[in-house]
Length: 75
Image 1: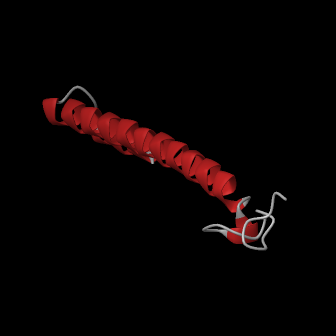
Image 2 (image 1 turned 180 degrees about the vertical axis):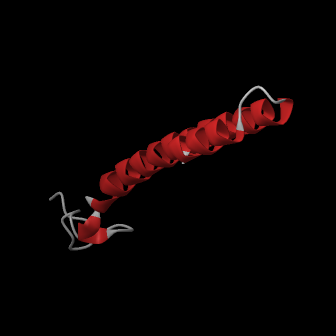
Image 3 (image 1 turned 135 degrees about the vertical axis):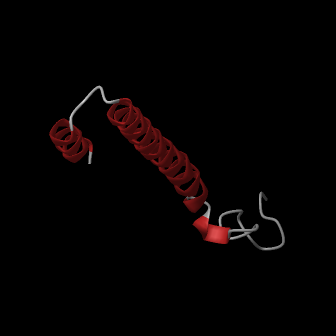
């Protein structure tokens, strides 16, 4: 009793005895997504800061030396 066609439930189904992989894949995808999101936000803020720096240099608010120094700090 409790058997289905000679299988006890642990070796049957789509994944068979590899059912434990699904939660690992799920959490792995969630963590990977979060990491990629954080990295994209950091890159975006760096691009925005560099854009502002270029704008300030174009307006003449900072000197060439200041621009180069600050650009190196951002990169």
